[in-house]
Image (cartoon, rainbow, N blue to C red; front, side):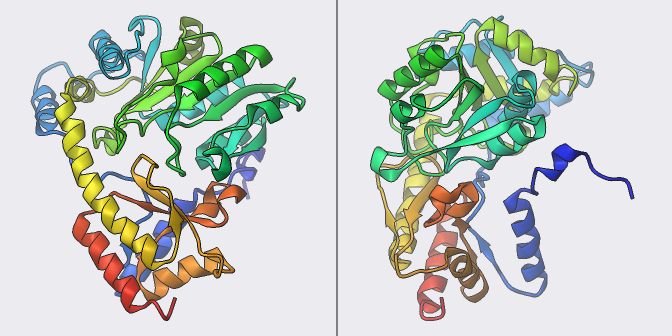
Length: 387
């Protein structure tokens, strides 16, 4: 048998990939499982965005390979978007690199900068892709703890006391997923100074800043330095998850370095998708406000679900999830989650998939119609004594 590469042996299949198969199996058995786990927007993009895609796709000459850097108009649209909503000025020619989804950017950055023997600071709890990509490069993950008592922010003073000589990258994610902790200018200033002091590239993953957040903030609002980089995406903010449109914003040296890797991985983004992304980036603030009205209504029902499950949550959290601490009477969260799925036919994400700091937490996505959340609430109420 042909053996897989050693790098694959260090990486597990994504949790949701396995769980979706399990849910599909239960549905094939006739069980109507409500999936409240994955943060995949259920709403469509703005109609003008879809029209732009359709209309552009009808034109001659749009189906060929495109520039690895995206068309200049898309880079300019990203620059205008940052200026308008984050009050950040970015050079569209040299400091922006469009991506086929920001998740690929996590891989591109890791493959560009990490060697075997390097170390990467990864948040715990945090997005599993940060660890997975580091392992694929042969680098070593050093998980730093995020705690509710510190508003889910890293203890940089404590980190500075450790040996950081092998650390090359640090992943941060604000607004934070899964905890919903919001961004803060003071934190961004501290992170920038930390990166400069220890020669570490601080990479902020920023796809959630427009969801249930009155003051969107970019890491780059404190400056674009040689030690700062930001990923962003249209997946959550514009309901374009399947369209795969993201970006990296950084100094020219980083854009050029990452492009060397990226240009060997894809052949550019479909031109009609780029044109549609430009349309999305030009939408007014009314778009975000209307989206958030719906998310607020859904979140209110999710709060009721959390109350019914006797979980504790912070109403100041932002983003498209609700993160909550499980009641102390629950001894085994994994078994409890499965019990809810098999007996109430509702799937909820366990926090342990984001690291052991999430062991006593659960997460519910807001990506379903309000009626779905009400049905989930009803099922949990009816089966409360069984779970």
